[in-house]
Length: 75
Image 1 (cartoon, rainbow, N blue to C red):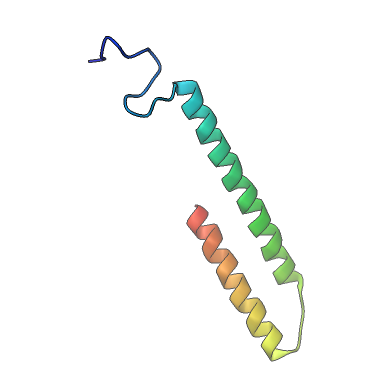
Image 2 (cartoon, rainbow, N blue to C red):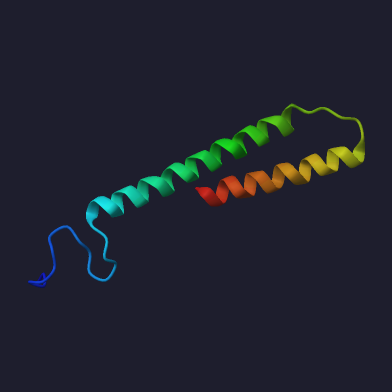
């Protein structure tokens, strides 16, 4: 049951209104989406590179693995 001193639309303990919570969640979602886009562009760049140098190929494979792990952790 809600406390009589609590204003409607707030969550106890955090001091934020529902609108503020929604705004904060939207900012987080937008930041994650931008991060996904950046990682996607980096991934495409790595996949488009061609090289016969084994050291360079190994570095590209490692970079690709790291980017894919970051994309997976973002969901």
